[in-house]
Image (cartoon, rainbow, N blue to C red; front, side, top):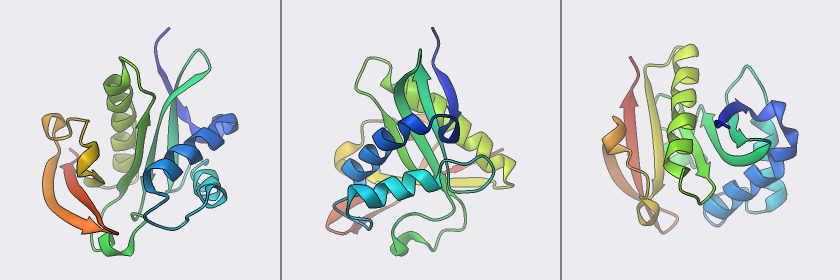
Length: 159
């Protein structure tokens, strides 16, 4: 069965795992610094019509990934950029993780375009540079150190 992409709002049973992914990735760096805080972040993204917004990837009811689009990143240091951010892109560790991330990114790009944006940003830890953004049309803008963690900032123009 193919991977399906749906609104997180359609699958509230996946809010806790998405909150765990956010907490594991960013919880030691920025607020919120607790699972309950990241639960709230995930709940806020469980909607259909406003940013922040999240999607989940699933196959036969099993959660295999999630992606989130925000007006601003979690950290104030990056709020100088004028377009939405992919603030979460997660996939379970399996042989299709890159496919899952590519499907989620495509949906996030469509969403940004729907909201009238022509550029999108993302950031991720240099140590976790395991997804080939540059090979998928993204450009590296800069490398920054925030909260003691080196991050790549990437940008993509949306046609």
